[in-house]
Amino acid sequence: MLEPPFATVLKPYGRALVELAREREEIVCLSGDLTRQCEVDLFEQALPDRFINAGMAEANMISIAGALARCGHLPFVHTFGVFATRRPLDQIVNSVAYPNLPVRIVGFMPGVSSPGGPSHQAIEDVALMRALPNMTVIDVADAVEIAQAVRLIADLPGPAYLRLKRGEIPVLFEDDHVLSLDRAQVVRPGDEVALVASGMMLPAALAAAATLATAAVSASVVNVPVIKPLDGATVLDAAAAASAVVTAENHSVIGGLGSAVAEVLAEAGLGRRLRRVGLRDTFAEGAQNAATLFLKYGLGTQTIVDQAWSALGRNDPPPHSLPSSAPPGEYSPV
Amino acid sequence: MRTGEAADTKRLADRIRLNAVNMVAPHGFGYLGQALSCAELLAALFTQAYRPERDRLICSPGHYIIGVFAVAAELGLLDSASLDTYGRDDSSLEAIGTERSPVVDLVCGSLGQGLSGAAGFALSDQLRGEPDARVFALVSDGELEEGQLWEAAMFAAHRNLRGLVVVLDANDSQVDGPVSSITTIEPIAARWESFGWAAFEVDGHDADAVAGALGAAVAEARPSVVIGRTSTVHGLRCLPPEADGHFIKLPAELARAAVAELEGRLA
Image 1 (tube, one colour):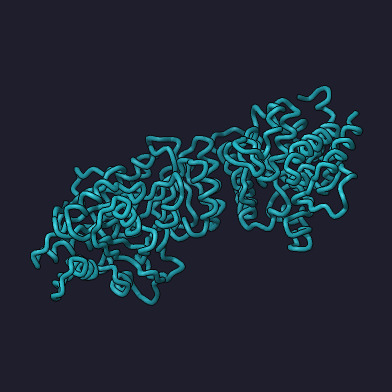
Image 2 (image 1 turned 180 degrees about the horizontal axis):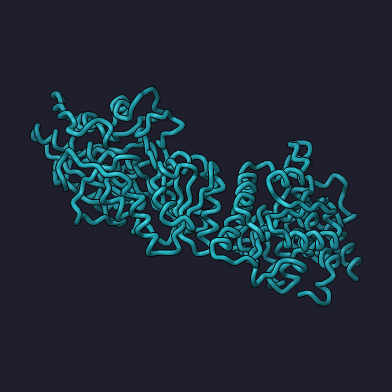
């Protein structure tokens, strides 16, 4: 694992998809009028015969992708997360998930990473996709994992939803990092509180663990790139080793990572105090930039620290998180 | 199957009706009206246009699958004995089509999705360079109320998906009553034409006219639609005038009368 501030790169997904598609002719790329924003302008330029712009018609795009998959194509479908999940939910259910077809739905701009208002913020996409039988749900943290995720999901027999940050993508992991679709990963050991994070919240969870360490509190950090199927064993091990658990997700606390972890803990009968950091059952309004929204709605390092402190039953003031060493807005910004 | 009894599309249409009556009768109610309205459309499609070994068939409104099963059994594409299991526990012949439904390449229970699926099949043919492939999609007029259908219609015309043929059962029937009383979908042909499709409008109970329109449709160099004007009570005089076309009640006595009427006509 690298140390912050993390360098950022552009279009790791778009490059990885083109590279894989050159090897695998069955891959086709669909875009819903957000081609450059979803990094697949690279695909359109490199492999125009296999690029299909479906326009602003997401329901049709999803059902077409399902039919293409029935014919042996391997469709990767691209738009923002809101339009990839909310709008065509019935089509995903009937044209993709129920027939268990290998359609890859790639939704960009997760949670409050967009200051574009509730219409553009995918705050329940993980919950919606997690509820569908057959669907794999992935929320990766960095450019190294993104490149590997493209190859790994290509070989899944059924459908997958891949949730991706738009724009600058941080590089958290060394080149030799290995992403697994089956295993979550303890990226920092600790035995008092387990911080379980996905996607854009991993840098904040790491910063929170470092902050807690300054107050002599030992926090583990578990990176959960695959929210469904969840690696319950790794989550349970980390939780059992600690006396409290804090989840962190750039998503509603209802139905996403926090809910998935709660289900695993409860079904195992493992009694640990649990705090879920994420959007507290609210839409997010009123900001010029994403960093403000992350702060305003409690999706930052300090919130994770405070929740860990509370879950540990501490009554003294929690430590203050150090200012981020990254420029605002570059990656998980607060 | 283009010889003997099956070549007689008018007769085949009544065989579809008889099969549908026998499938619905044990339940006392069901999607009989759909089979009655699309009987000639399916009879002509299956004998004059659709080539099961080469083409793809989509049944967009899932409850129309009764008509597909009924015609397929007549043509040897489905075991006739299996019709007795229609709508029963553990049968693959579910009353609203599922992934387990035989005969079709795709059936959609959630309405308005079938044309997108058909466009996807036709797009695959285009990407693979198979110009002779045909994709037939049975669609109901109520589905024209769904926005997704028009998304698909625009997409198909924009991509010039030749070989894509919609067979539209315009029976003016949906759950709450006549389509025309709920939403204005007319002028149907002009709407499709304005989206870039070739449109052929016929009496959907005139099997020869349907066959002719299908022949013209498959010859088009662009996506095309055959609009069949139909009725959900056509071909069964014994049905009461107030019969609900979406979900016809068929008590035992009425079922016996229906079987007698159809067998009499087929004798």
